[in-house]
Length: 210
Image (cartoon, rainbow, N blue to C red; front, side, top):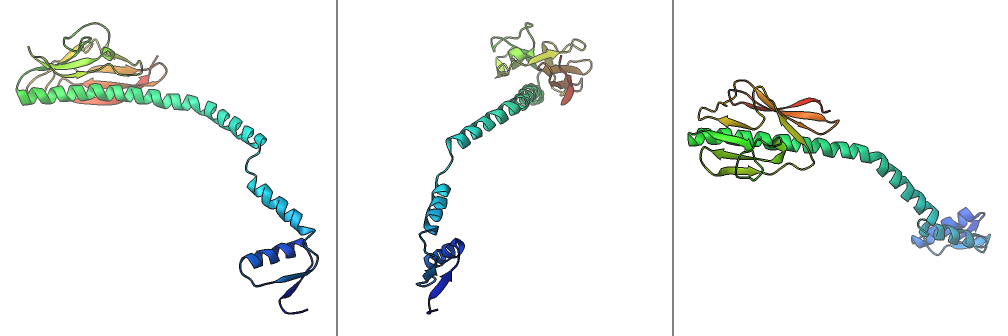
């Protein structure tokens, strides 16, 4: 066989030869089986690779994504509710800590109490209505809005942490024992914000909310 020529026995050989030519493998000439039989097959394969998704494949993909989304929704909702509980508990804890720090710094009693109008203390509702920090006979030092997400924030009755707590210049609280505020959403694990008589503040996991 002359130099530069290659005997082709199959379409695989023909495709390999074409590939070699495209890579600069020389002017290879093809004998034997002509490309009339192989070219349509090669053209069909190339068109199939470039065709993308068919309508049926696209519909199947959309249906699978919808199913996965539906399955993931309850878990996602649970995560968001736990985050709302944690955020509300941390916000109240931060208010207590700020009030304690201010009482020591200012040398005077500082109170954290529930507030509807963001100016005055109230005994209405629970802590979820919002709260303020204020010094005795002074305007609020800081105002906290009602937490998002419809959480409940019930304070303990003994000792009484239902409406307010006061911190003294020593850093101690006016509570005779440790008082708690329980942050809840139905069916979720609660977070409990605790204030000891010493003024120590703690946030811990509680039981399952009713």
